[in-house]
Image 1 (cartoon, rainbow, N blue to C red):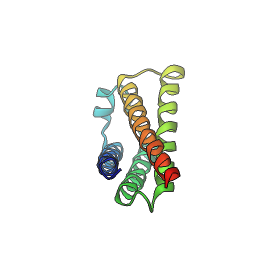
Image 2 (image 1 turned 90 degrees about the vertical axis):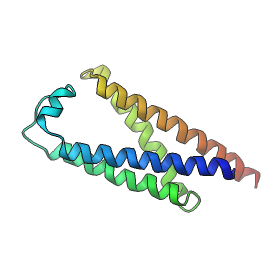
Image 3 (image 1 turned 120 degrees about the vertical axis):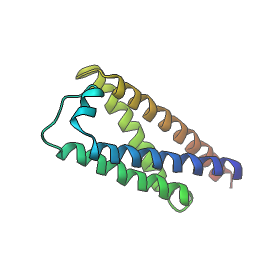
Length: 131
């Protein structure tokens, strides 16, 4: 498990970095970039900024989970739940409201992250039961 713990730790750190960068991007994105990504320009930045702050908060959760997986196991479980919900939300939005390639890509990435986290959770759970 030592090797798998190291891989999980690295994966959680990379997920934290990804979430942090997305969060900063959401906070500072310009209307020109929004248009390039397939979104309408926005006069109100509140919800975009709120989404950015949420990503930064989740980056902290991913980082702490990676820092001490045993101590922050519940935070790791919560992170799995968040990635699952993000995937469902993004794909539902694509189908029901509006399709865009960036949302499809984001949903796909969140789904892959969820599946990897869930795999490691199942491996850890088996090992805990065997102890």
